[in-house]
Length: 66
Image: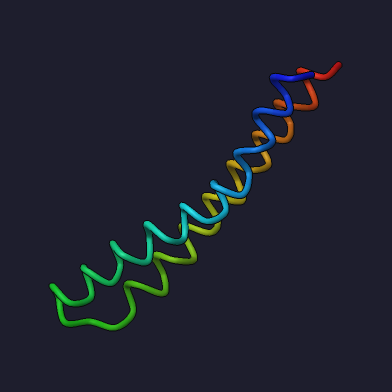
């Protein structure tokens, strides 16, 4: 029970870290290559990765609780 709770507390960090890291990486790549489309795409990919990992954590926590 405690371990599952510990895993669930990582969810906000997952949902913030993915898009945030992607934003800075995409922004840097946009400046390096002189484009304007990499950062928005990177943020969407980071958000999708954060959501995917959140779903995996929730499933793992449910399995631990059983």
